[in-house]
Each structure stands twice: as C-alpha cells, then as structure tokens.
Amino acid sequence: MIGVGQKAKRQTEIRENFSRPNPWRKLLAPFAKTISPLVLFASLASCASVSQCDPSLPADPRLTSLYEKFHALGRQQSSTPLRILHLGDSHIAADNFSGDLAKLFHARFGDAGRGQFPAGEPFPYFRRQGFTISATDGWQTVNSLSPQATGLFGLSGVRTTSAASHDLIRLRADTPDGFGNIELDVLQQPGGGSFTLTLDGTPLGPFTTHGTSTRLMRVNLNGKTAQTILLSPNGDGPVSLLGMGSEKARAGVRYESHGIPGATLALMNKWDEAILSAQLSAMQPDVIILGYGTNEGFDDHLNMKAYRALMEEKIVFLESNAPKASILILGAFSGNRLPRWSQTAAWSQIKNIARKDLPCRPLELNERATYDILLQNQNMVLARWHEPPRLAQVRRVQKQLAQKNGLWYFDGQAVMGGPCGMHQWVQESPPRAYGDHVHLTSLGAQSMARAFWDQLIRPYESYACRQKATLSP
Image 1: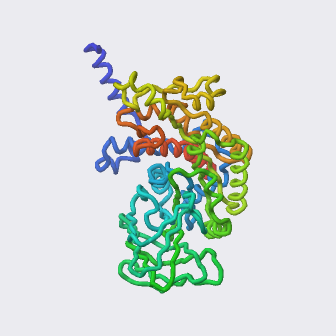
Image 2 (image 1 turned 180 degrees about the horizontal axis):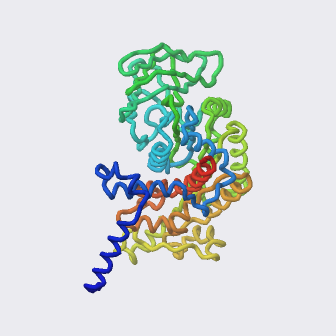
Image 3 (image 1 turned 45 degrees about the vertical axis):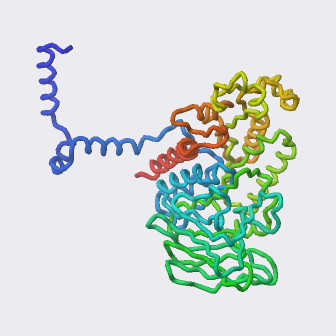
C-alpha cells in the first residue's frame, strides 16, 4: 500500500522524467495527435523485436537449401511457386492435417494453389479445403489400394475413367481466387477418347488422349483461369484421368497432397515408375513430405527388415527423380488398440464403461517380447488400450533412415505425449482424436499441423532474422 507521502514523491518523479529532454518526443511530436499510445507501443515493440534473433534455434543443416528458398519468397526475390508434395494415408485423405498445413504456408509465404487433386470422388470422405469436387455416377474410380486394382497409377494413387458423353466431373473453387494455370494429368493410350473442358461456361477442346502407347499426358492451360472447371468425355473412347487442378502464376507455395485411407508406403509399388518420374519432372517439387507409418504399425506381421529396405528404396527413387527436393519424414503418430475379443470376453466386468473410456497403459517389456503369443491366446492382460509394438519399431526405422540420409524428421508421437498420447487426446474435451484411437478430429489435426509448422519454421524464422541482420548496413 502506498502512503500519501510516497504517492506525492512518485508523482514528482514522473513530472521530472517528463520534463527531461527526450529525443523520441521531438521525433514523434507530429504524430502524437493521430497515433494512440497503445498503437505506438505495439509498433515500437515490433520494431525492437525484429533485430532480436533467437540464438537457441540454430539453422538445421539438412534444410539449408529449403531455408534459402523460403527466404527468397519472403524477400520477394522469387517469382515462381515453391512446390510441396505431401503423400500419405488417412491422416491427410480428408485434408484436415494437410489442409491446415497448406493454410499456414499460404498465410506466411503466399498462396500459389493446391496443385492437382484426384479426379472425381475417390472415397467417401475425400475433400479439399476451399474446393468442391463432384462427379456423375458413370465414372469408374479405381483406388490403387484395392487388391483388384490393375492398370497404371500416378501420384494420386487413383484413376478415374469414363467414355460416356453424359458423364461430368465438376471442380469448383469456393474462394474468389479460383484456379489459375489449369493442368490435368491423363493417360494417353491406344483407343483413348477425347474430352472437353468448360471454364466458367466457356468450352475448350477437344483434347484427345489417343496415342500409340500408354503413357502420361499433361495438359497445361497456361494463363487460363476459372472459378469452375467442368470435364466431360466426348463419347469417342475412354478418358482416364489421374489428376486435375492448377498452379497460380505467382510467387507463393503450391501445397499438393495425396492421401488414401489405409495406405502404407508399399502402395507406391503399385504406381507406375515411368508416370511418377514424368509427374515429378513436371512438378519439380521443392519439398516432399512422406506421411506413412500408422497402418504399417498396426500390422502385427510386418517384416521390419523388408520395411526398412522398402523405405530406403523409395527414398532413393524420390531423391533421383526430384533431386532439388528436401524430403521430410512424418514419424508415425500415436495410435492405440483395444483387441476386439477383449471386449466380448470382459464385457460382463466392464459393461458400465464405454469402450473409449477403458484405460490405456503402455506395453511392458515382457509384453512386447511375447506380444504375438498373448494376442493369439487372447490373454486378458492385453484387454486395455495400448500402442501396438510394431508402431514403435516403424517409428524407429523412420527416424534411423532420416538420420542416415540427412532428412528432416518430425516426431508426431512425442507431440501427442507418448504411447498413450492418442488415448489422452480422445479423453480431452473437446477431443482432439476420435474414439477409434487412430484418427484426429479437426481440432487435433490443427494441433498437429501447428506443432509440425513450429518445428519446421521457427528455426527458419531465426535464420531469416540473422540473415536480415547480416544484410543490414
């Protein structure tokens, strides 16, 4: 509590401080009537923070090339988009995690579009944030994950075909920006038919897909923009689409993502290498994000030696066909299992407890060592939520190969809090994960995207700050 004498003394000190010469007062006098004290304080604080670079965030040597590209965008020294290709499983199939990342990159470095999408509706909950995609029932969509899938596939892992002139695919941008520099990937093939594109009511074409051999055909409509794209076969033969979308003709980030529910890294074996090489050559990605691992980790029969060899093979392929790309590895997120047989066997004891509310406890060492036997014998010791042992092994291989090959690694499980992190996110209110203990809610996807962004970009921001200080006179 301040006494009367102390208060008077303090007021005297304040008056004396104001009466002293202050170089800032003369400089700011012309603006004093138009700038509020709060705005002025915020402005000065932001100016002061620009020159304060965080020394605890050193530049990651694995990302030097990427930092330079980000820096060129940030300083408006690049007029071409920085292209990001994100491949993965159901964590990006509904475009929650990937769409949230795209928003972060676009807000910071500029929006150069979302690249290509699979044509049509490849699975029930497919979507892309900011876009509406629909197709008539006549289109035949083949998912490369299907055991019966045959034929050629590209980066989307999906092929959509029709020969009927009444069939239609509609792609609409739900934001005023629309599409720019529209591009399509189709199969050129013997007997291939032609199609017409209609951009905001204006038809273009016909574009023929007939050729002497089956290979990738890229249709580039440079300079063409639209809010709505319609594609329809002309009825003279099958038209097979691998992807359709656009890249805006300006600096910024193109964030293209392809995810298939249930996918593993092995799915890439069903994609045609010649088509992949042609697509990567046309796109020239600056970043490739590999987001597989969850489905491998839930496979109790996964051969870890074969998985390691497969991952090494795919890294070599991507490095060979996209030599300028920085490859980022997403470590498999936390995921928990409750064996189905345990619910039936123990239901009389736990009938008053909801499935999602059963406890989670990491596997003990002896449980890991004998897990296959315990699972086969339906041992009730496993009648709880727990992380399958292969998931940790998959994560270990991912991290080891990232270190070996000088790739950037993101530990999603650590972000979630460890082996039972998924269970913790399910129990939160509002939840950040669904009761299946595998998939993230929109809130959880936002949290994961923010964590990924912070770990990747915060060191870059410190790097950019140091670069600015170096260039300053």
